[in-house]
Image (cartoon, rainbow, N blue to C red; front, side, top):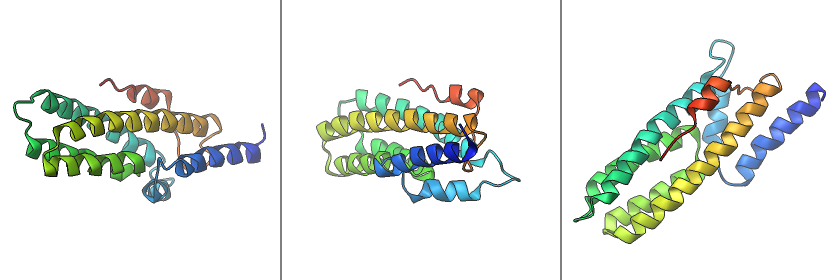
Length: 161
């Protein structure tokens, strides 16, 4: 595959993440910050997001199990942190689900929180899988675009929840 075709393939893959509503402009802004002085900037930010969000997902899951009664303030605080981390990488659908969850917390709707959290985990897993594939393509084609990815960091994205 020639270099131009590789660039087009990676660009199409990234565009599909936007077309599907998985990412927003924050992701582009991250890529624009990546340069020769910070060649792994996006990789590092995404890796940090997954490390932090894995911990937050576990904390939210635990708080949802403590149901008598649910501590909506605690849940809202945890989800606020999760939303911030997701926003930092441009995770559009995940961020929207965080907002919905927080609204359910605000009105004290436990069932809404449970449903929203299940949907959030689905959106989170879908984005993780697609970002892994995108970064692997970038790495395979010699960091076409600005993003790069390594096997070491790809492995670190194997999140259990």
